[in-house]
Amino acid sequence: IQCIGVLTSGGDAPGMNAAIRSVTRAAIAEGMQVKAIYRGFRGLISGEIREFHTEDVSNIIQRGGTILRTARCDEFTTPEGRKKAYETLKSEGIDALVVIGGDGSLRGAAALSAEYNYPVVGLPGTIDNDLYGTDITIGYTTALDTIMEAVDKIRDTASSHDRLFIVEVMGRDAGFLALNGAIATGAEAAVIPECAIGPDELTRTLKQGLRKTKNSSIVLVAESEVTGGAIGVARRVRELYPEFDVRVTILGHIQRGGSPSATDRILASRMGIAAITALIEGQRNVMIGIKNSQLVYVPFSRAIKGDKAINRDLVNAVSILST
Ligand code: F6P
Image (tube, rainbow, N blue to C red; front, side):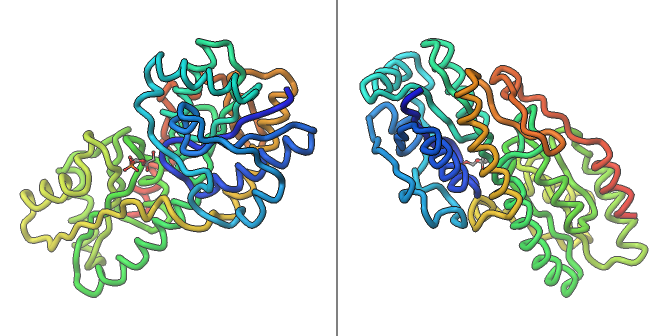
């Protein structure tokens, strides 16, 4: 492999820049040329590409977002779109591709590699942590810290006013942020799609707490049709218990920004090097994952299976700690 391409795709995640830096420098250290592709698969289709040298990735490890920009590209989900992308790769002389992104991006990467027998390695870049085969994804721990800081502030006003706050966090149908966010902030409950607790159970838990010692409560809700989001949960709680003074906060895209945590920087740096090593070893169509601190190769087909399980111990922990 003489020349690799690198792109970021889908929702941005803190640590993507650290990953771009690592992929670029590891490839250059191996004597490869690096071509940076802007705006994800859209830029691959339109040819928005330029060569990267080591200085192009200086002073970015601490920055959130992605210097390569990112996009969600509908055209790439079609065979015609992927054909155009493949033609760009050929005409640019790019021999292999490193894709940094989440579930949708790795699905696209897998389709491209299957149709054209083209070498692609993926790095799990998403705050959602919803990729199978890796304990954590790049961006997840930073998003968790952001949630924790925001909910700590909400707690101040919640307790001043004796209120119940229902806080919605991101996760695109996955409860990792909500569940661990609830543990980190001492929330009374986490409503997540993987094991949604009904409004009755939720309000019972809250009432118990309020009756005993608490004058305010915080509940974290994962965005999802299954949970109904924070607005849906608040509506049901208000119907059942009009005496609760309920407020809703949707944290939204604040969760995607900010300087990456040390964990995300180190993870992205290790995974970027591993992507280049994987390509040199002849690995194809795998995502780099981390399991028990060890880097592993996860076939795309497994990574995007969509059934990464929630740890039941964590669900129990929220319940035990809210008593
Ligand atoms: O996948 C990352 C994510 O932030 C999800 O948690 C969320 O559902 C989605 O992206 C939001 O996407 P957009 O940036 O297109 O609003």
